[in-house]
Amino acid sequence: MFEQTFKNIDDILHKDAGCSSELDYVEQTSWVLFLKYLDDFEKDKKTAAELSGKDYSSIIGTEYQWEVWAVPKGKDGKLDHHKALTGDDLKDFVDHKLFPYLKKFKTSAQSPDTFEYKIGEIFSELKNKIQSGYNLREVIHRIDDLRFRSHAEKHEMSHLYEDKIKNMGNAGRNGGEYYTPRPLIKTIVNVVAPVIGNTIYDGAVGSAGFLCEAFDYLKTSKSLTTTDLETLQKKTFYGKEKKSLAYIIGTMNMILHGVEAPNIVHTNTLSENISDIQEKDRYDIVLANPPFGGKERSEVQQNFPIKTGETAFLFLQYFIKILKAGGRAGVVIKNSFLSNTDNASVSLRKTLVESCNLYTVLDLPGGVFAGAGVKTVVLFFEKGHPTRKIWFYQLNLGRNLGKTNPLNENDLAEFVELQKTKADSENSWSLDMSDVDKTTYDLSVKNPNKKDETVLRDPLVILEEMKRLDEESAKIINTIQEMVL
Image (tube, rainbow, N blue to C red):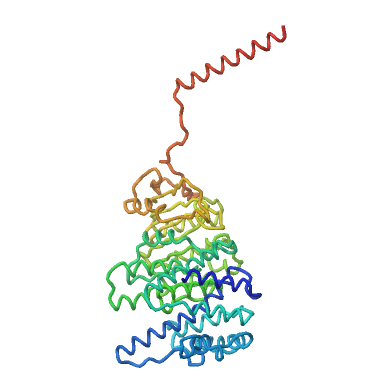
């Protein structure tokens, strides 16, 4: 049902003059979806309070509650068309009353780690782009059919929302910024293996795929106590995101996964001077896929000891600095980072291997990221000890990856198993740092164990072929001689 509802909403938005792309569809669906989620969230809180004999004070004022402005219903449980706003009346209410009201929560909330603050922050970043109040009425009608009350419903909704993010990425525009393939994220989380009590950070949070997957991983890692659940909700996941739409989508994604007030901040991470980072600012775990191909202005580069315009290289410096001693990271980066000869790349590799133990490099084939042909690697490192030996794994799939043939978990199963022992195989090997050129710090992927795929023919077969060719040549020569004579 959820999947068909999303398709129907996309069809409605496609007809609306204010929505021109898949990005707009996701953004506009998100704010209406969030308000319906909020209504079900409040109902659950009220029921829980009543069961324990307590009063529940609603977050949202009566006039702005979903069942008052969006879907007022009669005694028969059906939409009351006399009370339900539509057309220009609905659009005016949303634009001039609802959104300004919800924005104010950012200033009236007690603290940034509350659900109220998050409501205010979301609606400070968003605006209603649906120009037709009639189209908006249709969207509301579709979303009202959705339910977020049971665990199964929330689980299905979070997966469908992920699919929408993936489709948005596949649409081609800024695809790499919004969607990292879930099987890859899951693998990175498994290898880094966070535990409850760790603080987990993504400074290029995008759609929050890493934080959502880490939340799912930790939820099932052991039998959770009430304290554990509180820790996961408020003291575990942190992120920063520069772009408004990605910030909204990341926040929504975490909420739909079950993190009630995500600690995601809308800011440019790289605007922070890394020399100002103190111990209190650091995290146990960094999981990230910083944008590749981006270029930063010179004033941003001044925040870093190694000056470079390459966004991903600035992020890598930042991640090294933001990790606690003993902290672990899994970071996706272009594979050219391992071998580039420019001064910034060489200096950054030197910094990485001298300040951190780069214990594993996963070399990925092209096509892992839809719409981006760039080849990437995943760097797994631990801060505080220099690198002595690096274990490499080269993912050789024997097929081309693409939108219709994406990466799956089975593709990465051998890597996950072999990395536990750092075993050598046809696809894996180790590099001793004593063998690395200390002038270039070239760490490029050169698999010494890959079998030669050239098939050598039997010598007797070759001799037979030579004999046959000699006989054919002799016949041709004889024919030519006869013609001349």
